[in-house]
Image (cartoon, rainbow, N blue to C red; front, side):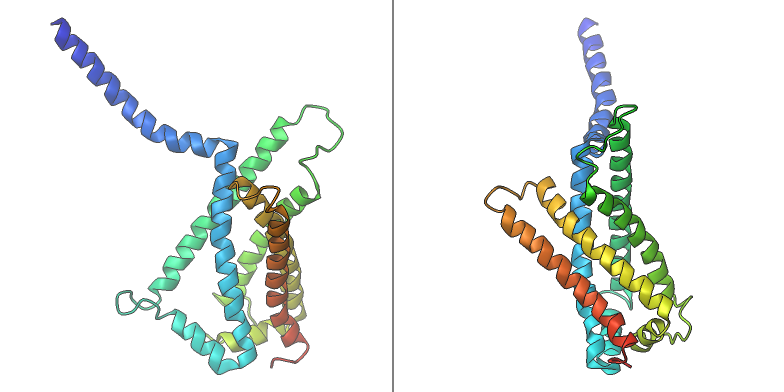
Length: 246
């Protein structure tokens, strides 16, 4: 009887602890500051990869409507016949949405945690609340609002004044012919450049990629990447607004 009781007790303990351990590994990682920063770094890397390819696709506008519209049509056929029409685009959108949600949630929670950690009545700004930190915070808010506008403008075509479904070249030209759309886009791309510059360096630190020998190269890479993305994205509205692209 004692042996049976001991086995029963051990069995019950195992059953109770298994889900706790399974849940605890993920929960503890997410609840920790390091875990949230790692989630931000990985999701940021996914978004950064998308931005690079998106910018390259945007530059096809300089090769004319046939080239850009053909590229947009090709994106809808990737993976066929294994994938259906536009399946790849929807998979990519879901991955990007998940990355944005993880990135934004982690950033918000880290920000709230940082504010709660400050001593009450502390009047001086802490070193962590630096220019870079404030830029990342407000840059993220600006970019989140811009994403909503950008989708309404060039994806759903809701706010595009002369939208033609299936004609991205014409839709981009129509959008940037309105001064407010060009201004919104340009300001957002400047915010993006600063966000990428600071975010790249922060992600490298979080993932342990930096060291005294690599710091200079990482900082130069962050500056170069931010400049290339900003210049590439800005070249499109500027070309349309100046008449170089019609």
